[in-house]
Amino acid sequence: MEKRYSIHPTQAKQFGTEEIRKNFLVENLFLADEVSLCYSLDDRIIVGGVTPVSTEVKLESHDFIKADYFLERRELGIFNIGDSGKIIVDGEEYILQNRDCLYIGLGCKDIKFVSDAESNPAKFYLVSAPAHKHYPIQHVAFKDVPGDAMGSQETANKRTIRRMIHEKGIQSCQLCMGMTELESGNVWNSMPPHVHDRRVEVYMYFDMKKDAIMFHMMGEPDETRHIVMKNEEAVISPPWSIHCGAATSSYTFIWAMAGENYTYEDMDTFPLSDMK
Image (cartoon, rainbow, N blue to C red; front, side, top):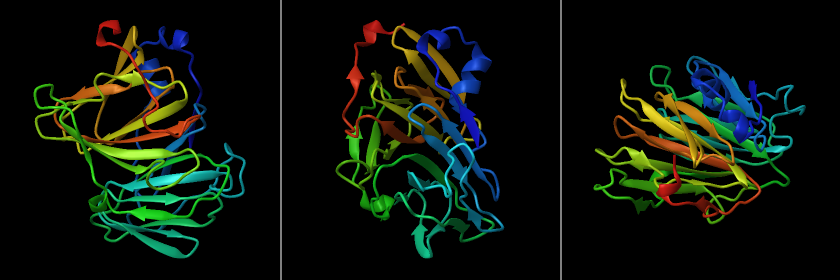
């Protein structure tokens, strides 16, 4: 587990390319038979990946969180972006197909990850936030979640948003997660962009073509920066930052939020004319 500190917007304005990447980009999420985690002091959100290939992989606690077990004071949202696999929670098995979601609440102790086939492993994407009460484990299949059509072909942002963990879906303390798919020929997401001072957000981009790159936009509306990203990488968006992007091909991304407000629609918009 690596640790990221909170960054003030005036500090971020002074960053060069390497400093921006070091503080906000999360790489190497999916390593064979390992748990890869990044702990951010922005709302104490943890982002990570687990790719069980030849063995069962267990989610352990870490000295950063000073807990006897990982979910002693936390909750966890998981998406499988690989082939089929299962998650074993305190002896109970949950099968996750590609793009399925699982929520695991506070107090669950023993969490293990297994792929169905070593040649085609599962890739479990994890996001965790502090929790104050227990909510039951819930699994939702991707095919059972209706999507909301957004954008248009004319503006190159025709996409479908699916909300999984939110106030009207899987219940949680503060974690909010979902998935957005861009249709072929569309590249822009979340435009016009917004901020929400009440919570941090993390984007994890995947389903990108081998040689494709993503230009993720961040920063204050009148002081923007960009990060060049590749497939299966994540970016931490602090509460003061916009978060939007465009890629050289269509793609899918998982968004995750945690913080003061649990309401998905809570966001502060601004006119595009204010962007610089």
